[in-house]
Image (cartoon, rainbow, N blue to C red; front, top):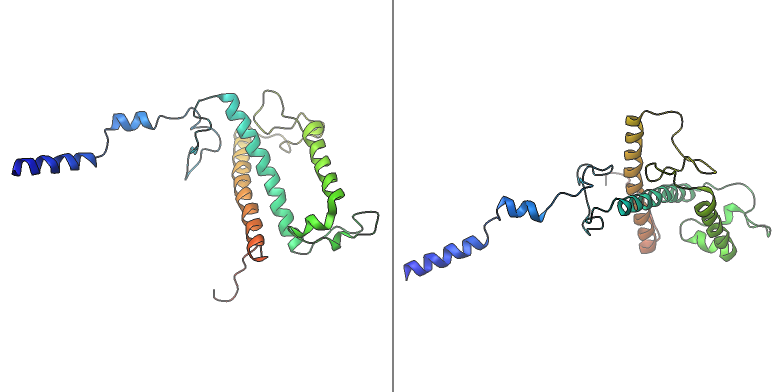
Length: 202
């Protein structure tokens, strides 16, 4: 009886023992993109959904291009949120009927202020930028629009090392801005206050 109990205990203990290093290594096989730009501490390479697990370089470049573009838009959106909530507006009228820029609200209220025709103009302008003005430079890194009709690239001549650092900084700032704009939009919908300000000894 004692031998049977010991065998059961040994079996249950083995069930919770860590797997061998060989099995662990095969289960967490290194990604071909683990050393790409953006795989930085503290997360390192982060692909929980396995979107680039296949190792397809074209797919990775496409997703990186989209990530950079969304990061750039989010940076502008977050700065726009800060600027308008601080009360800054362009001078003059926004339309022919006499609506002033100062009459437009901040945050989600701006959607009602510009109206349907204003939203259509914004979408048309964004579409023009997307289709006609800013194009990915052939054979360059994702997000390089330096060969476009309206070039967007690094100012001045930078060494490859400096360009790499700038690209890494832009990628990280874009990621932070995507989280930031999402945060202020959610907070505004929750209580009408997109920002949290600490005063006194709080």
